[in-house]
Image (cartoon, rainbow, N blue to C red; front, side, top):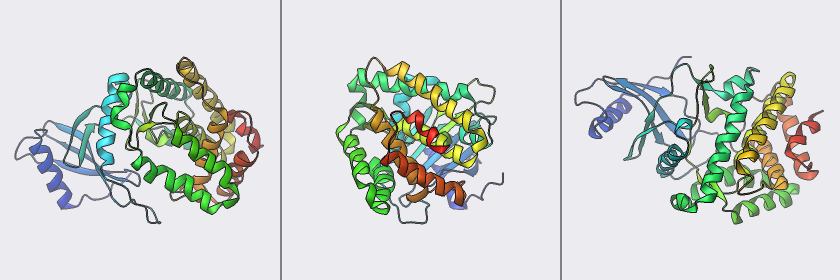
Amino acid sequence: MTLPITAPEDTVSLTAHLVRRGLAAAGSELRVRPLTGGVSNDVFWVTGPGVDVVVKRALSRLRVAETWTADTGRLDTEGRALRLAARLTPESVPKVHDLSDGYLVIERAPLTWHTWRDDLLAGFVNLTVAERLGRVLGTWQRLTAEDPALLADFADRAVFTQLRVDPFHRTIRERHPDLAGPVDETIAVMARTSACLVHGDYTPKNVLADPAGAGLWVIDWEVAHVGDPTFDPAWIIGHLLLKTLNEPRYAASYAEAARMFLAALVAETSSVHSLDPAQLVRQTACLVLARVDGKSPAGYLGPEASRRARTLGRALLQDPPASVSDAWEKLS
């Protein structure tokens, strides 16, 4: 893959920051390479003498066709959430080296690792990854539900509203006004629920995995908050449904990944809460619809897959199954 060219001013500012924070020696000549940071951040891989890190800088206006702005203070939320997750499951997140002055500096994943999203799109469905994601998420949910003091820094949902509720739930409500009832119910349940830590972007693109199975990280915590425990699992399941629509020949594997993910999650969290099955279905439906009719549509879906995703999302809201796992039956 050819990476974009780094602007000279970025190299200067990043080098100065790392030197100022004691992460690079004065006079160091650092190599700065942009990475794909999604729509909401500038992300750089910085290397040099004694330096091999990833540096993130939040954007105030996101890289999408429609106007979409958000508070850049979300980078502080991400750094704090990574540090909390590292206390709970140190093997599941990168180490935070520094968080200051609008920059987040974190450990770089091994070059052999890649995103679970890329694997899924290629039809390689690693069920071990699915099970581990359920177990890790369940551990975070259980431990933070048992000790609310861990969540003191994550009560503010302003950025979650800016980056998730408004561009996803409220946008599809505007574009599908006949679905206002179930979408409003989904939003209302989220608003009144403060059960545990929520990652807020628990998707395959934010999972870095070792192909050999030795490690796994969950990244991109900028909308972490105290909230609804169905939100994160809905995003894994919803994306597995979207991958099914994109590549129907792997449907059985995607469905099995969803089943194993949910089973591991429930096994970890059964002592603290039961996932509301109706809310989980609604959240999944909103995610599926939002990736075709929200502010950040999934670029890999072609016209026919997008049409089927729209049909599926609407069906899940209008005629919800008893369990979210039954969503695959609506694809037959």
